Amino acid sequence: MRRIPAQALAALVLLLSPTATLLAQDGKDAVMAHIESRAGTYGEVAQQIWDLAEVGYLEDRSSALLQHQLAQGGFRLETGVAGMPTAFVASWGEGSPVIGILAEFDALPGISQERAPERAVREGAGAGHACGHHLFGTGSVAAALAVKDWLQSSGTSGTIRLYGTPAEEGGAGKVYLVRGGLFDDVDAVLHWHASDANDASPGQSLANKSAKFRFHGTSAHAAAAPERGRSALDAVEAMNHMINLMREHVPQETRIHYVITSGGAAPNVIPDFAEVYYYVRHPDPEQVVDIFDRVEAAARGAALGTGTEVQFEVIHGIFALLPNEALAEVVNENLLAVGGVDYDEKEKAFAEALRESLPDDAPPLASAAEIQPFEMKPAGGSTDVGDVSWVVPTAGLDAATWVPGTAAHSWQAIASGGTSIGEKGMLVAAKTLARTAVDLFQNPSLVAEAAAEYRDRVGADFRYISLVGDRDPPLDYRRPAGER
Image: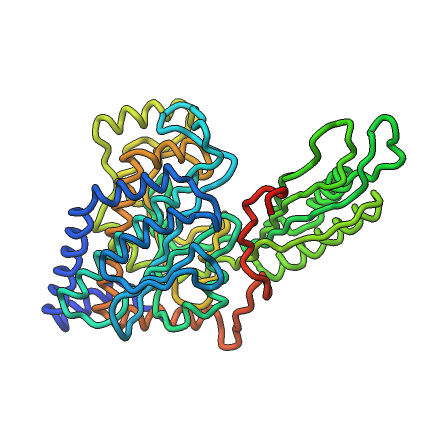
């Protein structure tokens, strides 16, 4: 299939229907003005979620804050969907097209930071928004509210739908929404993410499957009666050693990570329980399943060799992102129209101070105002947006919510996201998503082109089967082992 570039389509629409083009521009101006007029409110909501820093499936107050904004805006709300108490779907309008926008709001455990440009752990906080999901969720809600206001005032037909998706960080909340059929009637899905740059390029991600391996042994005095003990921690260490040897014998694109989440409490007590949490990644989900099976076999071998027992719980499994260039081109055109982030003097001072902790080759601060070239990006991290992209055409963007050069999952990301720097990037994303939605509502050919590309990429025989199988959402995966 030869795909018509979005720029050519736009020119064709202009020639055939200048009135429609003017109406589209009016709609884009309207949604941008709507977002700008409420920028202060959205900033306050985002910072409240930053303060809460609630982790996966425990984001009760964060989810409620976003739901409140949508309910006030006239959206119909379905809460606790797909077996997840903090998940929700907010809809406005009737009929097609149905345009979905994704919203995330979970924080990362084990890292916290004050709103400061130097390292300053936030007292009493065991988690932080090191991936910017407080901005992601709020910015997406802002876009949905703006589009709803335009649909209502213009009399345009269609449905705008906001998906509140919990536990992106390892809990795969979107997988359960997809598995539950909540995207079955959607024509296109839009999303965005916090970043240190503005970029709407299509790209791929890594498929990912994770599990917690729990070993049970026998406690005993480590000095007085070591022969009576069977160390669960020894089993974890034996498993980890085998996996580290296995790294030489897996495809080079593979990524395997682990963290020991429980390993005992005192050196003189042989641990009768230990737990290790594993991620297995690869661009191909079939390779992920194969490698994960080998990890499972290593766990059984470790248990056998140490005289312990092992059980494991699959926590999440997600597909790689399926790019959609047709839809991504529309997002990119709107990002170019919105532009990047310009710092005021206070923000420049904060950014310059924070840059002292970044690598010497960090991009200049001025790059936050730039839009990165549109090109296919290689696979990097993982996201449960991947599963959504395999059932409906999906595209998104990154927005410069962090000081250029900042890495995701860092204290610098938490710090930037807790300031007006983060809020400005969030508004760039909200405006871009809202403008793109206007295009999709007013130009059925864009939706049709994205759908045709989607069908070509998945193939006629594709059937979605979740990597998590039939398990229920792991609602307690962020709770310590002793609190489950």
